Amino acid sequence: MTLSAGEGARAPGLRTFTQFVVAIAVVVGVINCVLGFVRSVRDVVRFHAEVGDCVAGETEADMRIVTCEDPAARKRVVERTTRPSPVNEYVLNEACSGAPLADEVSWRTFQEGTVLILCLEILKP
Image 1 (cartoon, rainbow, N blue to C red):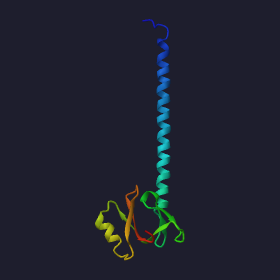
Image 2: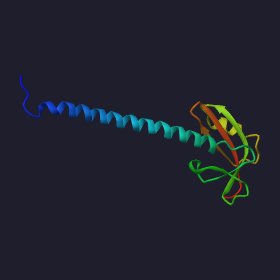
Image 3: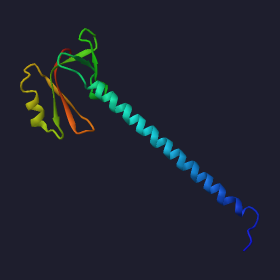
């Protein structure tokens, strides 16, 4: 069977296009892995507050450690503990039961299955 002009050029073009799409998918996958690592490091830093540290931010997403003299400081860590995942309301309340100054509880589950529980005293409404 004879190929007419132009039919032989389609296969290499399709192969090149497929290779290009696969290369783009690999690059996007690598970028996602790097961004996931950066997010996890950021989360560890954000939630690594110790007892006595103050935090700023209204939501968990924008919570960050600040000095207690910082005007943005809204809460102080009065108790900090870790538990295995999963946790429920009973575990959260029990974790902060020894901290009478605790007004609220913030918690974060990390990828390795550890839950960090912060018992927080509200400094400024």
